[in-house]
Length: 356
Image (spheres, one colour):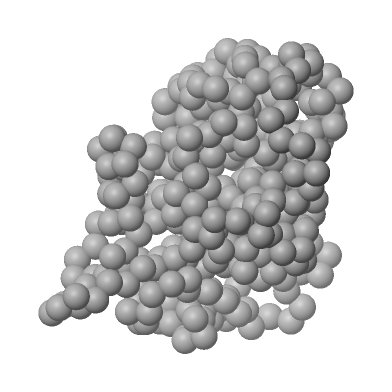
């Protein structure tokens, strides 16, 4: 490649692993600057029904506005799934509902030749079971869920799940299912680092969000701590403009992936004043996944079922970018030649170019 070379996601992953003093599990392999981008695509009609039977010629993909040479597959790839469950004190009343869904995961989400692992998190990250294709082991892991401390290291849990998925063959779909509140409490990993690692590993994140109102009303109250800041300092973080993106993040409102791109770019640029209240939305929008929520047991089961349907009905686009010399955020747009469809996919990826 001469004097010009690319510092790709894989190299960023090496740097992050070094900072955490952990050797990388398995970084994406590329030769001569060639990288493969995976783009799972969900296609629905106006009524939200899945559109099946589309042909590869009906898909086009633009990377930063430049049309790419793509491969489109509609065949199902075996799934490697990591389920991250918030198991802290505020989840005590909710965990009995979650414990009941272990048996649903084999047929609905894992599917044929699939495998799953389970992580519980509060101030700890506990791997309750490694990757297994035995439904009984997954169900047994769910029975081990117990409420813990007041912390909720959601970002750390997602990063741990990504590193576990990196050890799985690249031919498998890599998916994380997070069942938790939308906020993070006490993670050591920054959101930017976890998002970069998820994107470089081609991981898709789905979330089943637990209502904060429910956990607040049912959770055990924590001992009050003195507030070192005056009340006036608790409005909006300093230097954060009241734009639609920041307001939506603060209020937890959901928006389209395209509207999320400006905030995503700010996260990748490591803007100091960026404020993200809904971490679940950040993970799902950045990776092309989806958010669901529940209040009662039936709602939880329906959410798991809809996630399974979405995963099994996706089209998978792969390509090697023809414009990989362009540094910064690469916006992805997928166009489908079929009237009235709605397309959901990952909005793009971050690529840093270095020239000596």
